[in-house]
Length: 415
Image 1 (cartoon, helix red, strand yellow):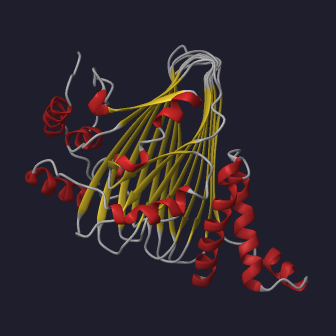
Image 2 (cartoon, helix red, strand yellow):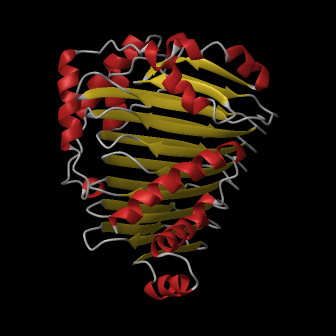
C-alpha cells in the first residue's frame, strides 16, 4: 500500500500502537529492564499531540565540535529534528555515490516500519526521517556519519529518530552513528535504524553511544541481508541512564553474513541492555555475535543473544560469545545466549563468562613497576580491545580511544 504523507504514517502508526500489547517486565524480553518509565513518558507526549520541536541554532559550535574531528559526510539530527544548516552538503553526497531524502519528500512512505510497539510509537510521533540510498557498483570513500545530538531546556523531553539505509548491488560503505546529549534534564530518545543490503553489498556500521547520565534511550536496528551481502556491526555503549539496544539481522539469501560486535562499559547506576538476534532464514549463511562488558559499581547490564536457524536452512553457521568483567560486588550482569535450531546440518555454538580482574596478573604488573591504577586500566582495556581492534573505520579510531580512556579512568576510580 502506498502511503503518501507523513500525517498518514502517524495516523496509521498510532492506530497500530494502540493495538499492541505494551511491553512490560512481565514479558520475557523485558524481564530485566522495566520499560514503564519510558511508556509513561511517551503516553504523556501522545496526549499532548505531535510536538513541534526546533533545534537551537546556538548549538552550532557545540555540534561542530564533534563533526570536525571525524572526517565523514555528516548529517545532524538535533532532538530528532534534521538540522537545516547541515543539509547543504547533500549535493556533494550525491557526487560521492549516495543520495539523501527526507521522509517528507518521499512519494511512498510505506518503507517506514511500524510492526512492533516502539516502532509504531516512533512513527506516531515522528517529525521527519532520512532515507539514504547508496548507489550500486560503488564504494563510498568517506564514512557516512549521523550525529544524534540532544539538548533541551525542558524536562521529560522525548525525541524520535528514524534512518533508513539502502545499500544497492555491489556497493560498500562505512556508517558512523554518534549519539551525544548534554544537560542534566531527564530525556528519552526512541530511535529506529532500518538497513537493507542487496546482493554483494557491504556495510561497516559503528555506533558510539555517549548519552548523558539522565538520558534514557531505546534503539532498534533492523537489518535485511541478501545474497553474498555482509554486515559488520559494532556498538560501543558508554553513557546513558537506561539504554536498551535491539539489533535484529535477517539473512534471506545464500552467503549472507552478519558480524555483530559490542562493548558496554557501565558505572554509577547505569542500566545497559543488549538484545541481539541473528535469523538464518536460508542455508549457507553465517553469523557471529561477540559482546564484551565491563560493569562497574552499582550498575547493571543485560545481554541476550539469539541465533535462529530456520527449517531447511542447512549449512548455516552461527556462533556467539559474551564475556564480562565485574569491577564490584555491587555490579550485576544478566546474560543469556540462546540457539533455536530447526535444521540438521549446521555449525552452531554459544558461550558466556563472568569474572573479575585477574589479581595475580594485577600483582605481577605491579611488581614490574606499573602502578595499580594503570595496571587496572591496561587490563580492562585489553579485555575490550578484542572488539575495538576489529573496527576498521580509521577516521574514528582516535576519537574512540580518547572517550574510552576517560571512561576507564572513571571506572577505575570507582574500584
